[in-house]
Image (cartoon, rainbow, N blue to C red; front, side, top):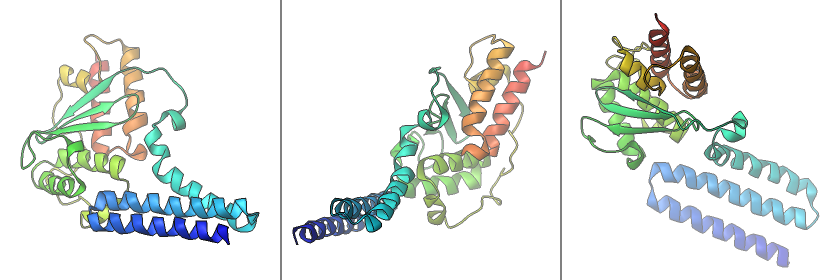
Length: 241
């Protein structure tokens, strides 16, 4: 009886947490709260059944809880858990369009951005909530297709798949400049900025920076076609004799 009482208290606590999250109604935090709730309920129930010797119920619930944990916790621990150990380079790259200046961290794969024009000019992307980011995306799709592609990669990396439903299921095919090319001509200074290199880098440094960035920002790795094209363009320009 005591075991059932403890389980009931855990379930009531989880329901109370869910009610509080729903009242806040911010889509970004709501989605995160639901994942926390699912993990908490499964973990509590699994612990209860395992402690009472009911392994037939406890083990499946433990695996479900582990699935929730992997979904929201492991990505936050960074690529060191998925990409193996390696020395930190401390390097970052800058990619700039009319609307955005994006900084790409070579080690963690993190993306940080500043809005240069429009409604949110002067704001950092990480200071904007999901609704504001979607509004910015729509503005970029109308006025700066390159920025829209970079911002979609940022949303994929920071929001997962959740942002698509809030964006109205746009596929991005009809916005201005929405091709996957790297845009216009690039100077050698811009190429070094994109690859995060100092003046007069050696060919091996250029290839190493290119490889490191493509491992983080290739479309298959959560980047974008535009970023990949920019990185390739920068490498080709710097290696050109």
